[in-house]
Length: 206
Image 1 (cartoon, rainbow, N blue to C red):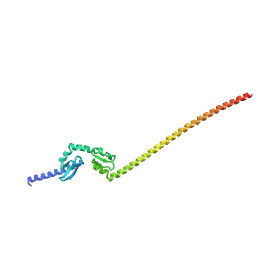
Image 2 (cartoon, helix red, strand yellow):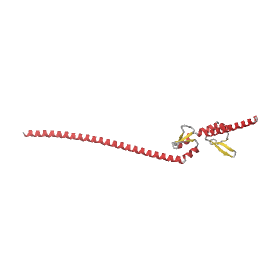
Image 3 (cartoon, rainbow, N blue to C red):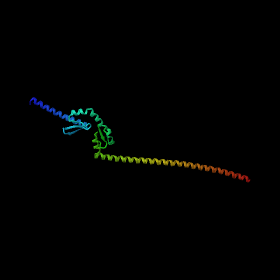
Image 4 (cartoon, rainbow, N blue to C red):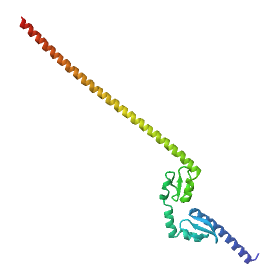
């Protein structure tokens, strides 16, 4: 094999390795930026940003420059704003391990902060079934809690009523005893007066 032919084959082999590496890096980049989608156009395969609407050639260097741009950075900052997903709380919440994702507390899976994906998830059969079960469980828990609170309130009310009745009885008993004592005292005084009158009458007769 001539030196020239060997160089050509080495160059081709090197180009193939670079192409494979570029494809891997491109796939990694797209995976880390879920808002970049591969689309088919009349001009061939393109990469489209769902944030800005830009359509770019499927080349690693072009995409790297794009995701580093201020335009894309500003769009991403607004895109990952959690305020848009608050309507799905408490079932869809921010992911504690990855600030660029959400977490479903029902299905226990992570979600990209892409409205279309989130809407598709919350409208799925599994999510709806688990949500219905959770809401039913919460309703039963709330009902049980209310019943306990009502029972406790009734018991406290009865206790207070019984306490008041006992106090009233003690007051009534005290009043009766006082009245009886006063009556007895008056009777005693009347008896003394009666005895004195009798004594005086006897003395006069003598």
